[in-house]
Image (tube, rainbow, N blue to C red):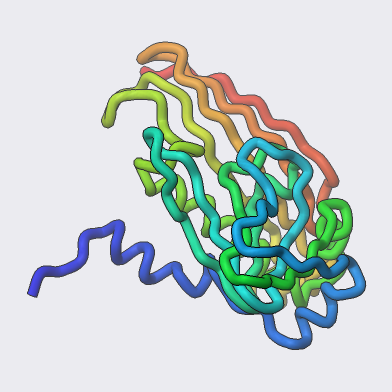
Amino acid sequence: MAEPDNDEQFYRDTESIAFPKLDDRQLAMLEPLGSRRVLRRGEILFKAGQRDLGLTVILRGGLEVFEARDGEEQILGTPGPRDFVGDVAMLMGTAALASARGKADETEILEVPAAAIRQALAELPGVSEPIVRAFIMRRQRLRRDREFAGLRIVAQDGSRDGNQLGVEYYSSLGQVGHFDNWEKQQHQIFPTLDLNFSPDWEFNLGIGVGLTRSTDDLMVKLILGRRF
């Protein structure tokens, strides 16, 4: 029996982290922050390129997340009840990488505005931890998908030329064996852009968003690198 390749094994191992189901307690914490809405089959929830999108939680029914790939539509995911749709672009107000629409005859969703979910991630550790972990893992999974147009690398395989989008995560949990509570920990997510000007020079830009009260709200990092 053939063994799965590294990518297949990675996707299997990270499935539960990237796509967790929200429990009753987590849904109850998010409910006051948003509003319910019903989508019909085929009704667009959002399109690739839209900005300032919030978090969408599916209460019943299902969605299709899709993109246009080489002139054809490709289904990226079909989230169902208790799943949520979003990634790190939501935290920064940057453009969505894909589109989403209703899959069932009726799909009921909970829409939490971007500002409200950012505040919740800082103040409600019960929902922030699984959501943040999912956002980071989803972006890592997309980076491994060489066919995904939203994160496609504009360079030949193995080349140092081209640009890449990515995400970096930094945290400070406290002392070993005595972690601080969530509010005192520091967690930051940096959507990043790597520019390779030549085989010798590279440039990295990242804008970090703090997820707890103890973390800086916003941080910008610029790195100019010289290869030797």
